[in-house]
Amino acid sequence: MNIQHVIKSAKQLSAKDKAFVAHCLILSLETQSDKNVDQAWGELAQQRYGDLVSGNTTALSWQEIKDSLNN
Image 1 (cartoon, one colour):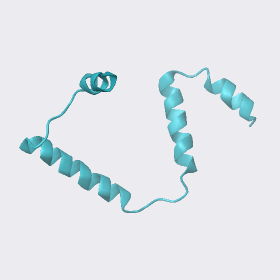
Image 2: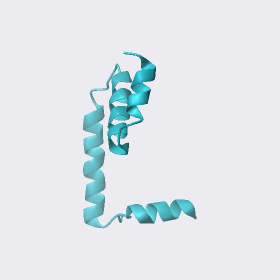
Image 3: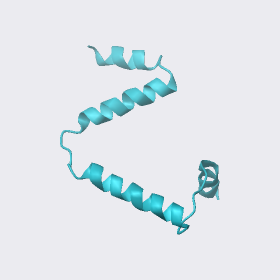
Image 4: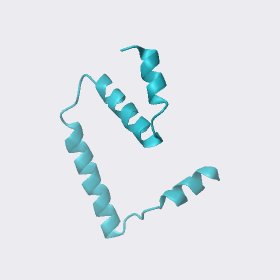
């Protein structure tokens, strides 16, 4: 398939579909994976959830995060 044709066709996709295609392309570049990555992400997620539940940290809304970046 011609790369120019692929790019031209991709421009006609919705933003959501473009993001999905980009995600798939990036994933296709990854040739090696660390078998411990999923476990590490899971442990981090559990730790952060525990911090939220215990009150050790508070959550911010997406709007609050964007606002803090503009200040």
